Length: 399
Ligand SMILES: [Zn+2]
Image 1: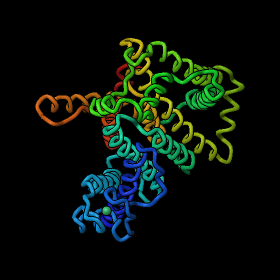
Image 2 (image 1 turned 135 degrees about the horizontal axis):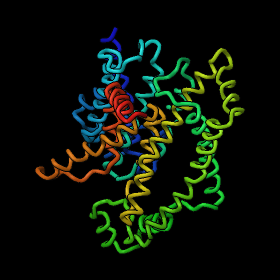
Image 3 (image 1 turned 120 degrees about the horizontal axis):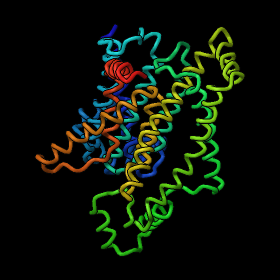
Image 4 (image 1 turned 90 degrees about the vertical axis):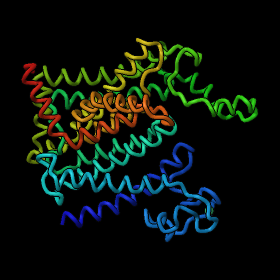
């Protein structure tokens, strides 16, 4: 049975990879991912379904278009094969090698596995796009976060998320309300987005084809940078204050509701009553949902915290907001432990790459998103070791 599922999931993964290719190619170009159908990058003619079979079509046509003979980049094949290996590999790690304890049989826990597949595919697509354009596509992160929240809330049993106590669970709901308030304030123009002037001038430059072609060429040759410093005509230390302002309702809502549950008996017994409804089934679903919500906020908080402190400290934009959304998505699917551990593991992967840069030629600098993604998947798979390490640390520190 394991062999059947592994082969089936590899093929399924290759089909997902075919879709990821569409996302990776079209999202940074602002094209629709649904329409039109696949077309040849050389001649633009539509590709028939029989020439669009993942892996096989590329191999049989030798990476060329049947109509015009133009090259179709090996990247398409690599992304399809890698996605197939990731999806089947995750199944192997979880259900064959049983690297994660307490997961149970595939027939019962496949919705959780499906959410993890969505996360791994999302991280893979974001990493490729980030490596190419130095931008993390936020829509992909939002989609994965939503999948994580829905999977955790719908899970009939306590989901494989770290347990969160009542104050943290209610605090997460309070922070969600705070997030809605902050977004509404931003929508009404009461809080302005950060780096808005720098973004506007960048968009203006990009949209103005009349501008000196020589300088446009120079811009293209220049390595892509996203970090704003005082050179961009903005003061990053002041810009980041707008983000702190945006975060105040979240912090306020989270702290207030958490403290209410912790210290007001009427509120805490009300919460306990709600959790016990329908023979405790409300508790299951609420436990899953709040575990995912708490993970969402903690995952984002590590990166956003580092961004704020780094920007204030160095006077140069540190870490992108895309990475905040990326790690929030990891937390929404896996709970708070995975993004927290990955936050500390990622620099080691980045360091290894930096060492190869010293010796290798032709490699180029990479943004931080791929390292965060790689670290997250590593922690997901070897979760038990990280959770055991955290327990040992808690005992050691007497927490
Ligand atoms: Zn063609």
